[in-house]
Length: 160
Ligand SMILES: [Mn+2]
Image 1 (cartoon, rainbow, N blue to C red):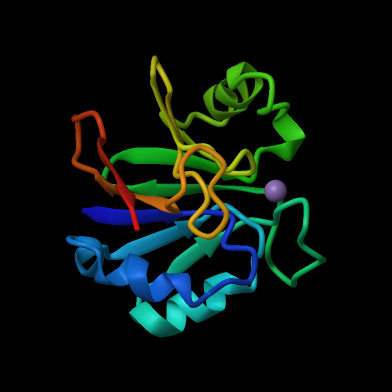
Image 2 (image 1 turned 90 degrees about the vertical axis):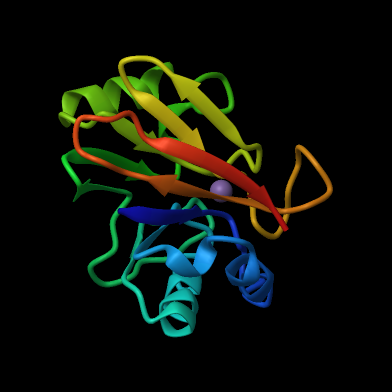
């Protein structure tokens, strides 16, 4: 199953158009939004007609039924999704990976730094970067991830 991962759209939902017209994005059957701003996930849901799982970022206000972290189970994988500011991610991803491990996840997804990252260990740690305000390159980024049972996730980072 192919999923899309996006973060830190910061209200600039117009960029979703470019994102969704990128090669392969239309095939994503589900999206994860790692926060900032969580309400942007509603727009993405409307645009794609697909479910969008979201968490709260440090710039988000209280939203009914939306939390700081959540676990999503897809195709035999468990994905720990959180924005990252509560896990010291500006320093490194050790605390985040540990939280993912504790919740029985094999994949951790976060945002917050606006810097794309893919780390492979016992936990696959993914940051799609920011779709609207990248700090690593000029172009915003997101990820498409192919998930199959008993296989490591196949990750593609895409710049818009
Ligand atoms: Mn943030």
